[in-house]
Structure formats: C-alpha cells, structure tokens
Image 1: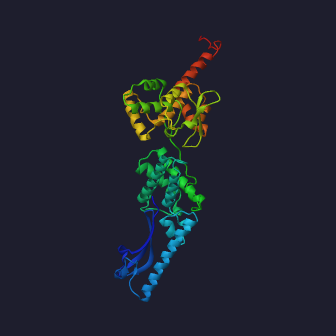
Image 2 (image 1 turned 90 degrees about the vertical axis):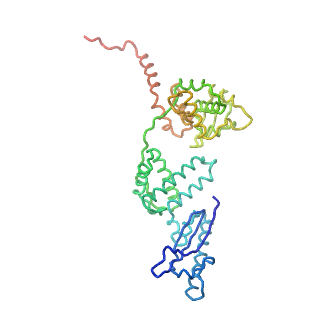
Image 3 (image 1 turned 180 degrees about the vertical axis):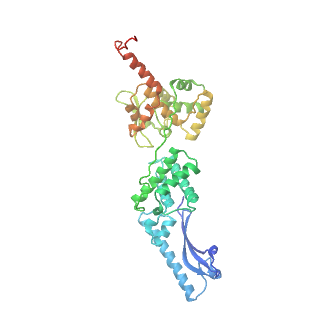
Length: 406
C-alpha cells in the first residue's frame, strides 16, 4: 500500500457536552490507519471553520486555541519526521504516541504486527514466500478479532500483554474459531515472533510468553505405497494438464522436493556429481537447509520428458491448481487416499525408508536442519518393521530352541 500521511482537526459532535459545546479532535492517518486524540478544547459548533480547521473570530480565547492547533500540527509533523529519520515504526498511533510523550513504550500490538508484516512483505521471494506472508496476515486478523471479542477494543498497548492474554488468545482460537491444536500453536508462534521483535527493539520490557508452553498433537503421515505409486505411474490420462501434474507429483515422490521447491527448481541447481550421476543441490525456501538429492532413473526419465529452453525445470502452476487436478486424478485412479503436493514429500521419505535408505541420508535429502524432523517417518512404517523382523527371525540360529514340553 502506498504510504499516505494526513493530519486534520475537526469537531467531534458526538461528544457534545451539556452546554452544547463539542471537543476539537486531531486525526492522524498513515496508510489508511487512524489515530485520534482530543485537544481538550470545547467550543460552540458555530464558531468552527471546517475548511480552515480553525475557529472563526479574533477574540483572545479564539486566538489562543488557533495558536494551539498550529503548535500541535507542527509537533505532529516533527514526530513523523523523527520516526522516519531514526528508522522507527511509522504509524498513526506511533506518531500520536510520540506527540503525547509515550514514545516507544506506547506502541500497540497490531501496530508492531503490521510493522513486522510489512517488512516480511518486502522480503517475499528473497527470504520469505508469499504463502508465509499470507499466513502472518491471517494471524494478524485472528488477533484483531480476538481483542474485539474478548476486550471490546480495536487494539491494545504492548505493555498490557501478559500470560492471561496469551492463554485467552489460545482459548479463543480453539473454541470460538474452532481451530485445531497444531494450527493454533502456529498462530501463537507468529504472535511470539512479533513479541520477540518488540522486545529486541526495546518496545516491550517483559515477555508475556514467559512460562507459556504449547505442545503439538501427533499427526498421522499420509503416503503412497509402492503399489499405489505403480497405479499412478501407469494411469492413462487424457488431458495434457493432468499428465503434467501427475508427472511433477511423481518427480516429488522420488526426490522429496516440496511444492515451492519444485516450482522454483532451476537447471542451475542440477548437475553431474563426482559419482557421474545427476544430482539436485538446492536450498529449501522454507528452512534454508541444503537438499542434496541423487536423481534415481525414474526421476531422470521425467527430467528428460520436460526438457526445454527455459531455466525453470517444470511447468508448475499454483499450489491450489495442482491440488485441484490431483483431486481429479485421485478419483480416476480410485485411490483410497487424497493426493496432494505435500503427500509426495511424505511418500519419498517413507518409501526410501522401506528400501533401506538410512534416516540420516533421508534427512540430508529432505534438507532437514535436525534429524528429529525426519524421525516422524520412521514411526509410521509397519511394513518395514515386519520385513526386518522376518530377516531377524530367519537369522536366529536353529540351535537356539525351546525345550520340549513334558
């Protein structure tokens, strides 16, 4: 949004007192967001000149009030310039806070959240994805709804936040918004990041998240079996778009790339390794971790199928469109599981484990920063446990036997 900054003075007739006089108010607007404060002057509405934003007349009291209006206007512009020149958060509330002497400790929750999101927006495509920015905006909207519902206010000062506020926000998300545990924890983590930003900038002295703990629920990982992968690979599809989406999905099943990483995969990130095989070496957009993936023959075949003159490897459309087509493919293939782009990543990890690829190697290929993120896949493969126990059972020496029952 283009930055706009306006200052106006007006009569707030809705607050007219018993003597029929209305207060003069100052309204500061930045990027469409307003902050209003009273000048503590009550005047007869007939004396107010809306065009000049001053009183009509030449009496001493009128001159005094008009001089005060000019002085406040000058201070507001000074506050605006101060925030810009010192690299501070520039918002309507920040400007009126500076004017009133509240300065940094007068910042509000949503102001800092907006500041964080605007900064994140400038990093889209460099440090953050657009989807991450959208998720933080969703968190902002949930927080705004929460304060309106719980406290009947549009915003609150950072210094008002405490443990009870965080606990109430969690309850609001779970009960009023009917959001699941893990998604609720994600929204709380977004707020926590914004709070940490405020603390780092010394806008907040005490962390309301102190001693507040969250715990995610275990989620079942959905993946395709080898038989289901075979059905999908051999499925005859009429539409070229369906074929492309199926092929891209399969490529992810055999490389472990996420949607955003396959979408941004370039030829520069594919080369010949020291072993003479084709490798992908790519930094994951989500974590920044390096994925090092040896291309298997079926994935190499898919690469050859989509050779082109562009630097982008595959013609990947939006995640929403890819998942919509995958839903149609699911129905046609009569699979018992709903296909999605993220399922491909799960399928790669679990399938590789069944083929005796070590969990350390899988962690490297997935670009996980910690092997703990990869261990979730090792807990869901009963077939691998069964196969390995078969081998274990056959390896037990025949001389180890039970005594005969008498």
